[in-house]
Image (cartoon, rainbow, N blue to C red; front, side):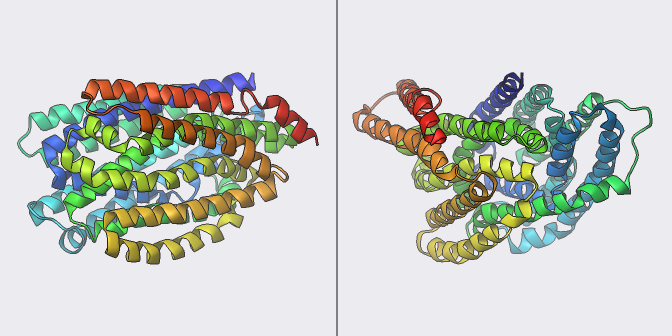
Length: 501
């Protein structure tokens, strides 16, 4: 029953994120066409601001997911679930309002001293930043209700609603821009409308599914005190990881003009495809790990950990290899813009190994969150930031945007590898070598060999449609070979003998 729930959660999350990813792939070139690369650079800056909003989460979302997962096996704790949710909801909305006001207040400084515009006026940039602040005020609480639905294990329903809202956001903004003369302002006004609608709908869904109780939900200082230590621990690590993962974009946003920032963010959009693949696995397994730790079932926990890691290999590694092996072809099909192909291709290839390391970290990260010992990881992102910033400044001065991506990739592999190793040595002793060899190593090298062969044999001078077909065929072959080489299929007996020894 648990496996069925896990796989239904992964499937629903995966399909919803694939649908959203396809929407992004379709609409981003249209955004570039309507807005131009300089204005699209402002859209990229909006993405950077949204990423940094996690700083203000303070671990509240993770604490809500963990608490609701723990309470799910005890029908007597329905009132606690509702009271804790109300308490954290009030805090979250308060933070959201303050964050939106803060961004609005500093917008004149950003417009005049940070953003490097060429054709856009300072007034256009300022109005756009104010629109971003309002959109963020409504968009931020959506992550809170999403975390709550994950804790309630209502991921299928949440995924369906998310696809509907994202479709409205993406397709609606194209219609609005087509009918408006000021396309940049139209883009952000529509984002404000959809962000407000998303917050309302997600809130209604969350409170509909949370267990009923006799007493109306109320603010509780006692329940808040029971989760604040965990929340702050998660917050410390999350904030530091956030700063690490976005330092390159933030620093380069002040060093590159908006056009080249647009190229950089277009490359990041390709790397972010991995997020679509690994987040469903993390989201589905995190509540399961939490329940297994609560039940003190170490055997089932190890089995679930390896199964999650193997799924990660089968889903993520083939995509990374195909993107790295065929970056120019993918960008050409996606954007049909030679300047984007030329400028973004080396950035994409620099991003991907670091993005792969980050994807594999999410399974150990779920383990450590479920265990409740997140505070012990704080030192790792601190070291990562201390390494990234000087390396970034040196390589960016020498190689521009490509240097920024290379610096992020190198330090990300170092950081994520170190954190994953620490988690496995402390939380799942004896599993590190098995994880590296069986769950990652064999699928990785199988996929690498087949991708190199496919790159060598890949025909040239194809039409876009033929290229797309050939790329899909390459991915299918690579993914199938990776799945066959994975412990999910052929190595189960070998693993059993090694584990027994």
